[in-house]
Amino acid sequence: MRTLHCPFCTPGPAAIIGKKASPYFPVSYDLFECRDCKSRFFDAAQHPVDIDSIYQDYVPRAEFRRSPYWQFRKRQILKALGRSPASILDVGCRTGDFLMHFDSSIRREGVELSAAAAKIARGRGLRVHTSRLEELDFRDTYDVVTAFAVLEHLIEPEQFLGKLKTLVANDGVLVIMTPSHQCLKTWLIDHLTRRRWHMYSPPEHLNFFSTGYFDHYLAAHGFTLTRRTWASGGMWNPFSRVPGLGFLFKAFMFVLDESYVTRFPLFDHMYSIYRKKSTELR
Image (cartoon, rainbow, N blue to C red):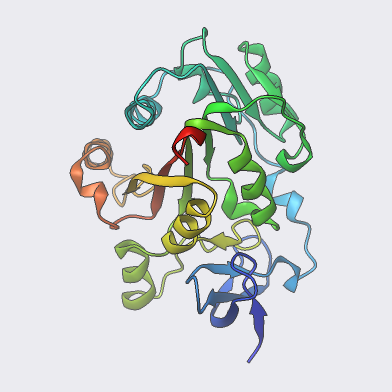
């Protein structure tokens, strides 16, 4: 059986636990799971395909509208931080929708590789960097650093995470959202249906981090987990094509995503908030 070393907790051994078809190319990828940290991953090098072609059809929306989803995330971050931030960096900011929910008196910066999305964000008064995070030279740290739906796409996520953690100010917070295979929804799909969990979409999504890996890695670098929730992210609606019922179900799921139920791993969008310990306390 083909084996690889885990790219996250090297040299942990990883073995194939299944095979998943790509929704973009007529090929299948081996799905690996690390025996130590329990993270899962696909090997992007398994097939020679043009990964960039997956993102060519992305057309950013220029219009900005305040979102209850981002307003809720903002409240959770401010609660974890315990104060109003002076600065925030959103990595993978797209057109800056999340950053726009913070007051303009705050230093709001983003990192975005899409030139079209970055142009829109800059037009909104935001400072946006368009290079890979690992290649940027930041002079300052930030009270809040966020990375929503980024890590699962990266071929070398450990380099990205290594740079990301250095950008958080002492007593600041790091917020990460990734798809979680350690939830009831994924388990039900894997064991009771013939469907493919939509997050298993190689080579777009390559990495599925375990809670154990994140917590161990960040604890070793001075971070403490303050809050973790699992939400639907508004992505699941079996009644989306039914007039009226689809709207009601979406509203119900939004209320559910803000409830105490999200403390349990029911759904597949995992939000983790870590606080960086102050040097005075270490």
